[in-house]
Amino acid sequence: MDSTYNTELPPDSRLASPGNGPRLLNTRHSQIAPGEIAIGVVIGRASEYFDFFVYAIASVLVFPAVFFPFAEPLEGTLYAFTIFSFAFIARPFGTIAFMAIQRHFSREAKLTLALFLLGFSTAGIAFLPTYAHMGATAIIALSLLRIGQGIALGGSWDGLPSLLALNAPQNKRGWYAMLGQLGAPVGFIIAAGLFAYLISTIPRADFLDWGWRYPFYVAFAINVVALFARLRLVSTPEYSRLLDEQELEPTGVVEITRSQGRNLVIGALAALASYALFHLVTVFPLSWINLYSARSISVFLHVQMWGAALAAVGVVASGLIADRFGRRTTLGTLAVLIAIFSAFVPMLMDGGPEGQDLFVILGFGLLGLSYGQAAGAVSANFPAKYRYTGAALTSDLAWLVGAGFAPLVALGLSAHFGLGYVSLYLLSGAFGSLAALSLNRSLQIRN
Image (cartoon, rainbow, N blue to C red; front, top):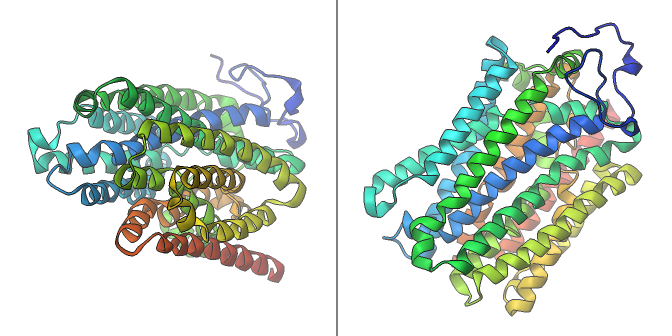
């Protein structure tokens, strides 16, 4: 591959029009359209979400039985959700550590190390002996591997979402922003479908013995392929040139915290409603049905898959809506609708199969519309120098604050105090989003 490339292109000719068709990324003087950047974003996010949901579903259906057999089903699930949250706690530390690796070595070295750590952690879970074979050591090993996943996901930040946001046409930024978010419903549909198939085709004893491990094998393979594909993209001269020209380089955590701490906090809270709803329509209802309902889990997973398909439509629609009315207006409106939806959580979840199915369908519909614009809603606040690291840390903090503990809190509150407390939890997320968006708007007006 010829490593030379044209560095004297005028600014307005750096990107091709999206309608010009695909171009070879490794040819000399090639131009990169936003659609080509979007491919890298979609590949990366879809693989991450599949891995994410494989672990999340296993935390409900597998880990309480195989790693916490000494506890009651509720307590075992709460223990599993506690370990589930470890990745969200570890992710910002992974981002910080791997940003330092990139500063001292290279973007390629950072992604390669992240690839191996993620692959090792996911494959390690697939081969992990259970509590019956290793006792408490198995729980410790599961916790360490989950932390490894979180650190690796923080390290896998490639800057492509920020590059896409900067290079998308002005009137289509909402459309391009939603593309990476499509990975969430797609990843859930594949993960839920795989678990539904295994549950419905093999005996429960075999599923808990060896069947649950297959989704982790698949997640390992998909992540390796996807991360190599992303590594190939960002290591080409054309992508390196664009990343450098847009100043998408890592900055130190102390520097960005001192200079951009306010933007980090606002960015993390702006989409709080979406991130809180994220687990309340995916992981939480599955755990509630598994513990307190006689419904078939495979049937309920299929209902959730239909809901995720609706969410995918909502994600696409959010791009059109955001380009028409603005991303922040869209997020604010959806936060109000999520607040209204929160009032109906007890009635729907206690309403039998019909009410539960309606909760899933309505929840996923709102999730698609809101989550489609949740990523980087206020990332434009960051100066160019800080956007690369700022976007990564904002995403990490949003996941940690909004979603990391949502299954644990929602199940714990509902089991001990009633479903009404789940409504309050979701309502607090909606208020948090509205407050952050309002503060962001007032600061912009003042400046």
